[in-house]
Length: 224
Image 1 (cartoon, rainbow, N blue to C red):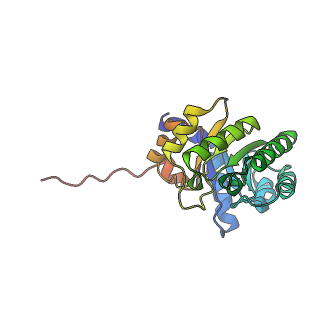
Image 2: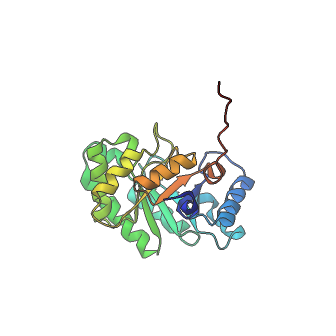
Image 3: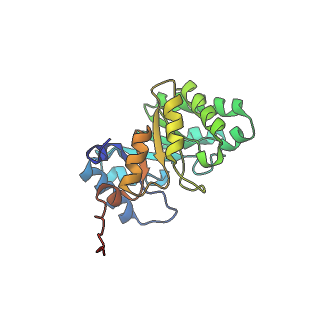
């Protein structure tokens, strides 16, 4: 993966708690002008954005950021945004996986996958890797594959750690299907983005778009 291939892999993200309408529209212009993969925004903004940008690919988050909402609530969120978006990134009930209730997680993943695909949406599962040990991360991968989730995604960006190349590599080396991998959370430089892609990610969720696309040149200091 080279920096020339970066734009098509980047999902521009604006999910900070407070921001202005102009900020999100400026981000969408970056998506349009640089032919980025999509714009990822809060659910309450999708109709507003679609009224201003008809042609960009748009995604939103579901059950975000904790993943503790009930299944019916997540389904309702997906249904409400479905007229305006192509992608939905939902937060898995990772607490259930941590406490050993894989059946609950499996039921949620299968139900939401069928629900989203029935609405012709791409669905990504955020598993919040910072709270999962390597064995649980692989368990999450297997459950996502069994449920035919389109992408497994590392992080919300609200946890203590974001995407780690070693976690991406672990998934890439152990996946049994063509499931995509999205690295998100803490990816702020072009070098970090390329590291994630070279480790096996096919999408990058990031807010520091300008820094990733056009990194500042290194400043050389005089030697002695």
